Image (cartoon, rainbow, N blue to C red):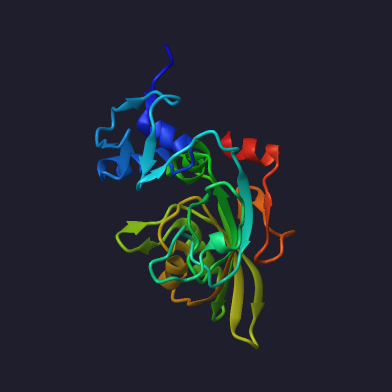
Length: 239
């Protein structure tokens, strides 16, 4: 008898989203098994027998798993489809597999963005418990001080929480242009976190670029271009 697996696991392995997100989709009634809506998280299926649909589209989990690193330009939204018909990152990455962004970068932030169709990979990269570092190059208006660097490093209050300690260093100070360039490394993923951290010390962000995810960098990829991750990089992200 063929082994049954949990529905959310099947969806995640098919690249729909992370397992946790797939659970939300099931609860929302967006998943069908053999044309019947399923909303129970404990539901199991037989992969080669049952037919699974997400948003009325048949899901296949026998596609080749792909892992992509994009150097995202400014002006693209990090989503699969935008309600305002803005350009999405999927306009830049054309592959036959159904991929999704791994995490987010806001429209006005450039840099390293992963895309994949491997739900388990997406989960490991995005879940806070894995604490994967993200490194940003930030240009702020004004001259930043060592005291302000220390405040950012120790954690600042933004919205209703205090950020965890970060690695922060000064890269360049241009007194004539009245700007400072700093590097911030965090492992949290709060919405617009780096911008809000800088605002908390009275500095407005002029430019923001994510240079690295973990030790994977986009320094050799032109803005708007992408490449597949190496097996070594995939294993590193999943360790």
